[in-house]
Length: 464
Image (cartoon, helix red, strand yellow):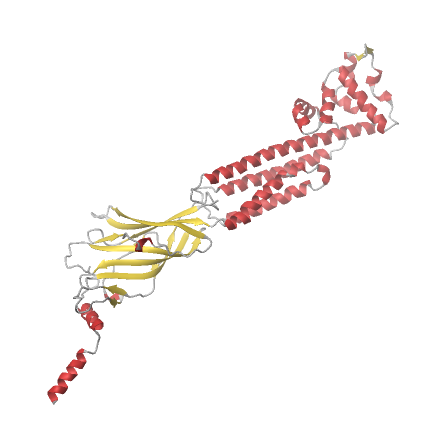
């Protein structure tokens, strides 16, 4: 009986753990140092397959050019010290990562002190020694931002993974082919959408070592969701640009010309500041939209200056006549005054610079209009009415003496002279206003074409 009890105790002790526990305990007890590569032939390199699936974009700090991602990582290699007979146990076993050798992995563009953050997940091993380690990871890396086509831009970020201490004579890092490595599990966040997430293998040599290093390089292309910026920045900017073009069409006598010009300029500066806050302060490339806003702000400042000039000329009054050089320029630009509807100004200037008969004729018309409006005006104030005539024409000497441009504007009563001077100033202001408006319109068209052509040369996959 004592012998039977002893045998039962031994059998119960042997069945204390399951086959999985007994197998795991035996494999780990005979594993040896975890710093040594799990190869029986130490002269051969160990091959490690690495793949990452993009799960989520946590943040993209464009100002600091740092991106934080959630990726699902899989590492796979063959551990020759974790092999057993399938007849003993034909299923996978679970192992804590710290108990076995792990491949060294480094992210070249890492900016986080801890490199990679991941939970403590188990490693699975199969009877042939194939080890798989699946874990979600949070990585923070640099990503150089190109703002030229903002907000219709596509940013390209590079993630370079490599073993830091082992060259290809010790470890070869490879990207696996197959369906598992090409899954799309990304969750859209409404700000950025990955247009592609691809990987490739590359071997790079360094001066320090005789053997090259294996790299797995991932390239992620992020396309900005531009709908928000299109509705809050682009369209309002277009509307403000159209509004700026209307400043020159507002009559100086309305009293709101300066208010419209200044308000439009302040609105453009506000929108330019909103755009600047959304982009990093880099000097490699200048954004198309920033250049457009710079042109529009400069044009807005010019619009304010031109409005001040036009209003100053329009309200000049008739105390002083229009300077001769101004009269000469406007007279030479006859087509401009006719196009802008200032025929009366052109007719008066033509009379001032034409032959004697036309001067006398315009003088008579001017005084006749003055008499119609002011019956107390005397004809004796216009010397041309009493000038000697030959065959119905004024003599050249009389005209040369009495019909300079300033004399033309100064003839008549003081009230009539004041009104004629004031009319000339007002008509000149309206001509300048239309000239400024035409130049402004041409610049706006050029700036819009620059922006449109610039965006059409962007990446074809970008959505505008």
